[in-house]
Image 1 (cartoon, rainbow, N blue to C red):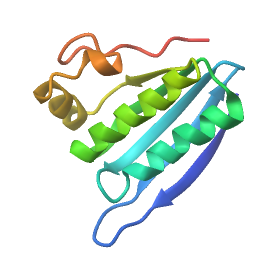
Image 2 (image 1 turned 45 degrees about the vertical axis):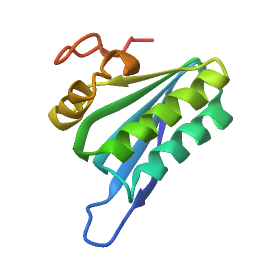
Image 3 (image 1 turned 60 degrees about the vertical axis):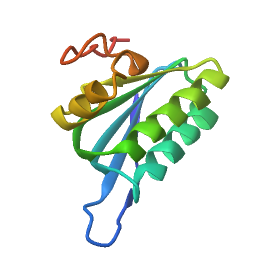
Image 4 (image 1 turned 120 degrees about the vertical axis):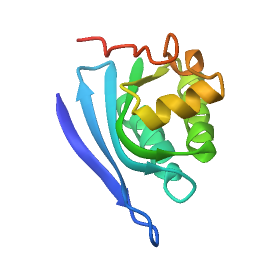
Length: 129
């Protein structure tokens, strides 16, 4: 297992988005996301997922969103893009530990199950490897 930071995004008047990558064995990558996942920063999460898919060829990518403070429609679109890109190469992309803001937005859009969350307010735990 090893971790490496993904470069933070810094947009004018916005707190940065940071993403730490943790590789758990040959088949699992965890991305720990903190900050604002929105229009100015969402591209960095997508880039981190694409990088993980290319470098590690995982079977599972878990996006831990517990420390995401702001989340908007662009964040949702980015999660959908990450999920689609992962599926193209046989990888499952799952959101784990969503922050209250992420949970609220996904629930309002009826998209909890789309990202591996069983129901509003119910969090699918990370599988241990």
